[in-house]
Image 1: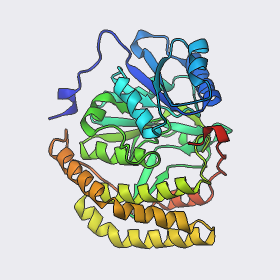
Image 2: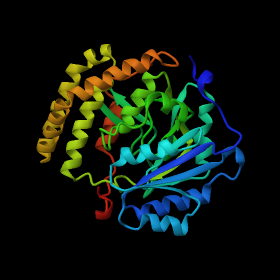
Image 3: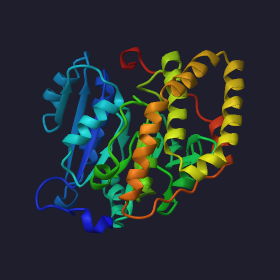
Image 4: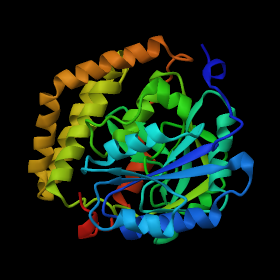
Length: 353
């Protein structure tokens, strides 16, 4: 079975792409995001889009703002704050487009971002597209040029902190995955692989989905001509011990749930060494406790991990093509960029959730 056989293709009516924006107490952020979309929105029927904002139980007047200034936006209001994955999934479920862009509320888009973002889907094997994501406060620097995943269990952003000029000239090329801040997805691929795993809450949910898309036989490519600007950590406070704990848990969860058996066997020793190194670094920076608690949370979630490993093999059995994983032991360039990365902006108090 191939993607070309099952993807229903374009319809005579309805949008070609749905832009889904989850938000929680991010009134000012989402307003800026929507203003950029309105400014650069495609005007042709061929590239018609719909914009869906999912208000994840906000209390800052987000819904009133949208009703007054953005009446063309589809608003989904959730009664209670369920976290990023739950809000994103509500938008993905409601989306009518053949393609879907999942966009953070702390982003802005550039001219032609939709056209360049969906063009690679002409190849039916492409399940996701990673745009070129630049730092909003320093547009000459890269936030992400697609995501990488190393065999040691480390998810990183390609090109993070590097000059934008180099990455803006890159051709369309395969990458491991797309950053959840701005990824494009084929709706059919999501129906096959599933939406975001709500167990994760936030962080590593895009890496987990990238793995599942590959288990289902799809690939992800990077499109440098689709440009999005992003504020690092404008929504989440990385100084939060609860967030550090969740990130430590999710890193283990994704590693043990997704690696194919042969690669997992080869990766166990390097991964344990890497986790030990991370623990030493966090101990030196006074962050060891939430890190260890997160790892223990992952151990306690072994039943969930086992259930998801079974699901991955079920995806492979029904895949449109053989699952393809090319994972380096470690990506030295990404490690260098991580150490030299720009300082993260602290989330405003209103946006912490």
